[in-house]
Structure formats: C-alpha cells, structure tokens
Length: 191
View 1 (cartoon, helix red, strand yellow):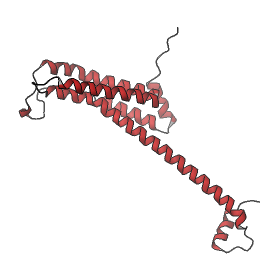
View 2 (spheres, rainbow, N blue to C red; view 1 turned 180 degrees about the vertical axis):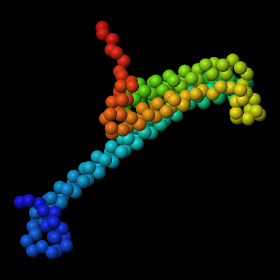
View 3 (cartoon, rainbow, N blue to C red; view 1 turned 60 degrees about the vertical axis):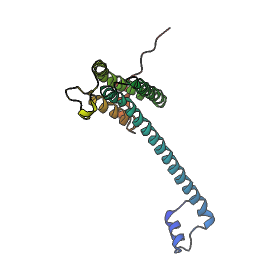
View 4 (cartoon, rainbow, N blue to C red; view 1 turned 45 degrees about the horizontal axis):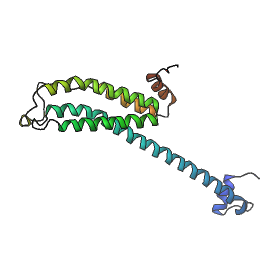
C-alpha cells in the first residue's frame, strides 16, 4: 500500500469514497508525529546546549576583563587598607582558572583561544598595575576619571576572542577549521 497525502486530506474533510480506512492512516500519522516530536526535542536540546555554552563563554570573557578593572582598583585603592586588593586579585585569578579549565573540557581549541586572550589581557594590564602600585592612590574627590594615566588597550584581544567564540559556535565547518588553524594543539613530547 502506498501512502497518499491527498487521500488523507480527503478523509479529514470527508470527500473521498475510496479513501483508506483510519486503521491504515493512523499508524502513519503516529509515525510522522513521532518523527516531528523527536526533531523538535533534538533541536531544543541543541539550542539549550548552545545557550549554556554562550553563558559559559560570556562569563569567561567577563572574568578575563576583571583583570583590567583591577588596575583601576589599584589606582583608587584605600591607602589605609591596600591589602584588601589581594583578595580581589585572588578572586579574579580563581575565576580565570575555573573558566580556563571548564572551557578546555568543552572545547580544547577554544580553551587555547581563551588562554591566549587571558595572556593578552594580563600582558596589557601588568605593567600598568605595577606602576599603579608604585604611585600613591588617586583621591576619590578627583572623580572617577584617571587624568594623565594610561589605560590598558585590549580592544583587539577582545575582538579576536569574540570572533573565536563565534567561529566555535558556528555550524559552518570552514569557520571551525579556521579556529583550529589559529590555535593548533601544542606539540607532544616524545619520551
């Protein structure tokens, strides 16, 4: 027996005399409904996974950029309690370590991209943070702007990491291959 969509429609609207019986149509309808339900469930699962990854990657991005904020914290530190900043540095590094590990389990290549991003952010901030520690803190009464001070420039590093995340999440295999080419695995050591 062949399944004819027009025959099913004629049955539904009641215009066919030689239409197949409901016994013949119902199994097909159940099969089609099952396939559609599985497809929708699969799509929802894929989207939930992508949303979870987006959240992880955005939190990792924020964690890396907290290092820049530490520069401003050092500039505006409380001269009576400069050691409170040690806790902030510790928390920032702990967050970076967490995200480095978690991203590496999700995707080793994106883990390498995140490590490169973190290194660029820290490299831009490190000399400025060291300089800020050697100078007296800014006076809060002078406002929030830091006159006559440099600001860490990590715009290119931010753009690159966001491109890397976008390539990783893309369904385009070419973009994912480009990501793999940008961050190849380190050479293995032979014993």
